[in-house]
Length: 259
Image (cartoon, helix red, strand yellow):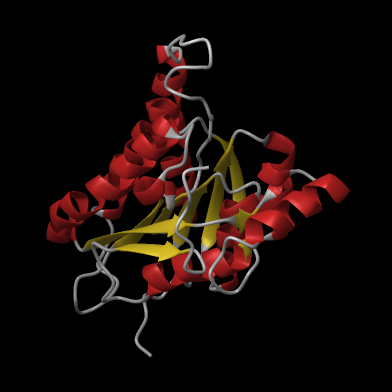
């Protein structure tokens, strides 16, 4: 099948030191990409980068300086063809609490800053570098970008106002950015994961019980998804040359209840 060839190309994966980002970084490296692991977790980031023959760059995705450093590191290893925007945070808090006190505005702002503004920051900087590469095929393809949203963008739960707003913004910007970047041959898609087993749920017996209960809400299969299952969809969106401007739920068919 005619797919976007990543051999000798470079890729940036934000949040690549653990969870979904790490799985994406490993699968991209297996396809021949030289991966920049852009993350704030230095020890884990260095370890993953070393294992996959890539490079770790300490990166706050909301910082232009850090974003430029990640892009520069990638372009030194090969033409930049891929960005996976996997870095993100969750911060659950109700709009007003049980005492009718409002949620601190800075909490909402911080989640938007990392998840939405950070995603756009990395995207604009990576796209500018991709636009300067030679076309990879006869269609004029120069690269592919995959953003990470969440099913919370569509069915956010109680306490998820900030998180859902940030991920809804990622969904909302997918098509207009895909339209913007079509002029330079860069495709843009977004994945909306459901309940994925990542380090966020902790470890131990209580954690396993919690995950088992969560899994019962999934339509089928009745379990949390794996980071590898999610990463395989990310890789499909990158390598399938006809996927563009789309948001794909990867969630086992779950529709989240209010709480």
